[in-house]
Each structure stands twice: as C-alpha cells, then as structure tokens.
Image (tube, rainbow, N blue to C red; front, side, top):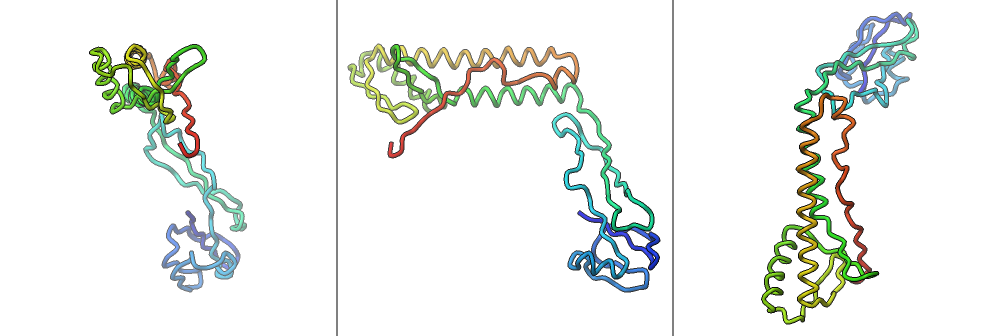
Length: 229
C-alpha cells in the first residue's frame, strides 16, 4: 500500500493522496494510474511515493481488538524521497470472558486432536503399537470388543494398527487393548474438564495470556507408515 505526496517544483509539500488513480500534479498534469509508473517517472512530475512499513508493528490479534488506526507521515520537509509512513493502531484488550472462551475453544480442539490422534498400546514388553482412535475406529473397537467377550472372534482376529501393521490378537489381548483405549479416552475427557475448570478460575487477562491450554494432555504418538504399506 502506498500514499502519494505531491509537491511543487521546489519540493514543498502540497498534498497527500491515497489512491494511485486520477492524480493531478502541481502543474495540472493528470495521471490516470500512478501504480503503472516508476518512481522516477512520478518524481519528474513532482509526485513521490510514500511507502508503508514492510513489517508494521501490529497489535496482538489473539488478545486485542483493533478499533482504528492513524497514518503518520514522517520525514524531512523538502526531502520527499525520504518521507515514509508509520501506522499507529488504536487497540482494546478483549474482555476476560472473551479470553476464557478463546482458551476453552483451544482446549476442546486440542482434546479432540489428542483423543483422535491415536493411542500407544503396549501389547507386551518391547512390543508397542499405535491404535487408531478416531470416532469411527473407536466404534469399531467397541463392536469387536463385544464380540471378543462373547467368544465370537475365536481368537482369530488380525487387527490393523495405525501404521497398517496387521497384528494377530487373541480375544483376551483384544479386550485388554479395547479397555486401554477406553481408559485413554476417559482420561483425555477428564483432563479437558479439569483444564476448563482451571480456565474458569483465571483471575484476569494476564493469567489468561500465560495459560497453556495444551498442558497436561498426553502427546500424540508418531505414526510411521512404511512405503508400500
């Protein structure tokens, strides 16, 4: 974004305009579109580009609301090539209720990612697998668990893990895995509830800013899928 400063032939500033279209130089020369001209071409007409900062000091969008801004033109008179713009924002902190709503939303989102991101199940010492735990997979596990309890699987189940490994499981092994996955889901839900309670008790905005909505949750296990699997 640019502004354009128009001066007289002695480089005395006359006016600043916002749009590159329809500029009129000090001598009456009309410029249809200043954006299509080089800075040197414009300078020959005593029209100078005022550049905005490449990396403006913007407010924190997470905790502040921008209510307005001022454009300040900074430079030395009669040196229009050195004139630049700065942006000054008027901001307002979000309310503590808004901050808590934001944190609670982040907690819920993270809890879902953890819950659906897989569970590292140790089948035996030195033998671990990542079990898929998306809603569809959890429903499938519950159904197979009920079959295992009835003996309908007949110790013949080959279960596909998150990395596509096909792992043979006895009915007893599958029930142990299903119970572990269920306990994992309950644990994540409990952490989510306790974290939300902690957020509700935060006293002020600074406490909200310092709060980590992902703390206390299990890490999402890494799933390595071999090429061709």
